[in-house]
Image 1 (cartoon, rainbow, N blue to C red):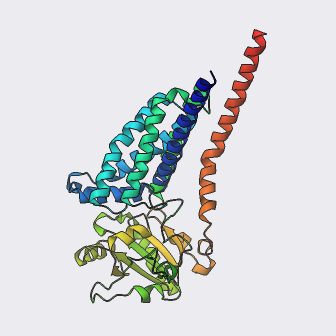
Image 2: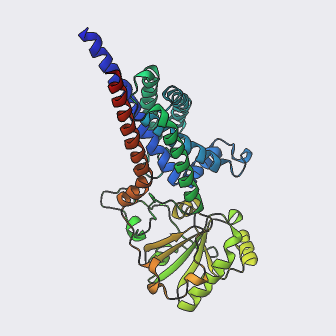
Image 3: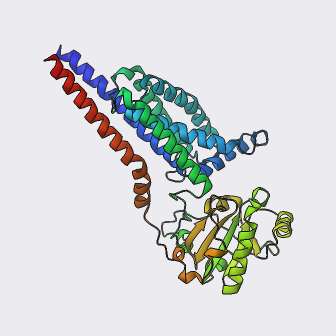
Length: 389
């Protein structure tokens, strides 16, 4: 009798431990992708290029796949945490990991892309580390699916639809905001407040610095201008255009106003792009751009700002602010010197503070919903017990 009870307790512990491991990993992986969908989009493009299928994919396909993957991981993670539709959720997660684990083994062996992108820029894993992680998760998924009836619910069946619907809506709003503007949490080395000089500096132990691939060259002479441009004192605007052929040309009026503002106040403005001279001249003819162009590899440009074009404001070597194409300041916002504008004196909050603010938008309503549900179930059980007596 005691051995059977002990066996049941062990099974319950194993099933729910496996569920919690999967839930937390999927939620973390999903939320990171929701915060930075363009980062996942770029990683999918890298995979497509390495497998030779990029030319067969529609231009919007990588972003759609990035959004779908982020939504699936986040919502399945929350479903596992709250034990919503436990049999269906367990089966879907098992199928997902059954497909991706052999794929990560192939990546570990062939190494076509060095970083899998599972956790974006928040936590980078090698391909072998990713495979080991997926083996552990697949094992947990098998155990969890075998004992899905032992999973302990955190919310009643009648309230599951509310948590599930709220999760999907929150995920969709967050990923839409991140696409339209910039990631609300920036895990990259070009975050607001970063000193590019420090980010590019090698330490005594020889560790690779956070920024090791930024090289700014003159398109005419080919000279390396990286140090001189970064160390140039004063205010400077960098227009980031990874690929001119894919850039949003609807911002040309704002960029013209910004150029006039910089010329009137003695601020530097230049554009950084990976496109060739022909595309640069086409952009100049089409937009009337009067700012200089410098050439940078596409990868660091995509890392600087998740927008095409995007805008960075620097004071010396420090990143003061960044804007997506939808947020570039217009003439009404550029009515006085930068020293007197509020967004130039912003001090960047810590990563923990930004993460706490973001999570509070999701967790506080969810926590209230859970408390109300538990209270209601307690009252209901009390009434049923009293009626039986």
